Amino acid sequence: MSIAPLRIWCNTAFPADVERALLDGLGPHRLTFAPARTANNLAAAPPDAGLLDADVAFGQPDVAGLIGGTVRWAHLTTAGYERYDRADLRDALARRGGVLSNASYVYDEPCAQHAAAMILALARQLPAAVLNQAGARGWPYLPLRAASRLLNGQRVLLLGFGAIARRLVELLTPFKVELVAIRRTPAGDEPIRVVAELDVDAELAAADHVVNVLPGGAATDGFMSAARFERMKPGATFYNIGRGTTVDQPALEAALQSGHLAAAYLDVMTPEPLPPEHPLWRVPNCHLTPHTAGGHSDESMRHVRLFLDNLARFAAGREVVGRVI
Image 1 (cartoon, rainbow, N blue to C red):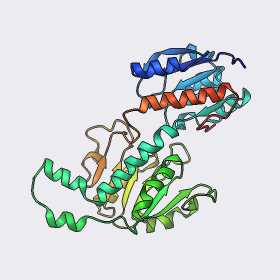
Image 2 (image 1 turned 180 degrees about the vertical axis):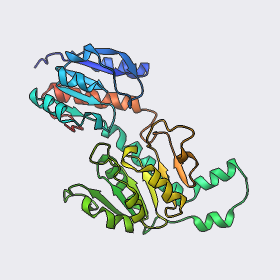
Image 3 (image 1 turned 90 degrees about the vertical axis):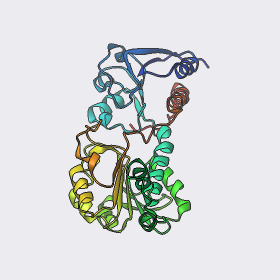
Image 4 (image 1 turned 120 degrees about the vertical axis):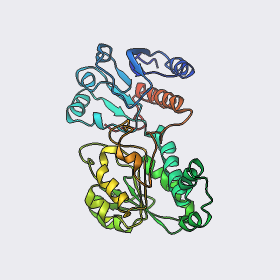
């Protein structure tokens, strides 16, 4: 059975070998690159007339172009999709039987490994040892040994239970931690204990580690408020690999400065890039990485492989992987 060629719009700048793999895998379909291309998948594309008559969009398309155009499937190069989670876009896609999918299956593994690495590093006092080597070069044998902890029996609370959290559960299970997750509506088939969002305050008070993997958006804006940081167990550690907007950062800073929290690790902040003069850079026991949790050496190629697999599915009238709208 012949498949009618689809018109594909893309605004992502790929390395040459990855771009060649994309072009070689298109089959009968026609691809047009946007005039403004970027390798930064957090940047929204500017308006582009070429998007308006496309069947498929790949990258970070302009929302207005998706609403007013003919795109029937948009595939994002991010796991987050808050800028697209709008009633007017949902309505526009629904009218033409369109769908939107994300890249959760590109980022679940690296983000989960990144979070697990930080949980282990802070438990074993590795950041303190690195700072000592870069600074005083002393021999803090006794204090570092005394502060090091085993994860066995510790409670890890996951705020959210999407693809990243599910993979993190698999990585942490061998360390014999107690795993609990918060979901707006528990499904009942999760592999760990999952409680409703209404019960988050009680769970915060019992957790040794709180890992925030919440997406951005109005429903999660400021979710970790001053009141919720106050409810956290004294000496607990907070991690954020979700979105910076979900955290009241001044409240987190205060909880660290007061000693209520032992440490924090943030891969996402607001704003990004975080200005050099921002106080979070200087808060004791606050460790930052510049939104790199999802990064990995074959990131671009994995995007293209997922897109091409989904393209075959879409052209054949099958459900695409990672559909969110």
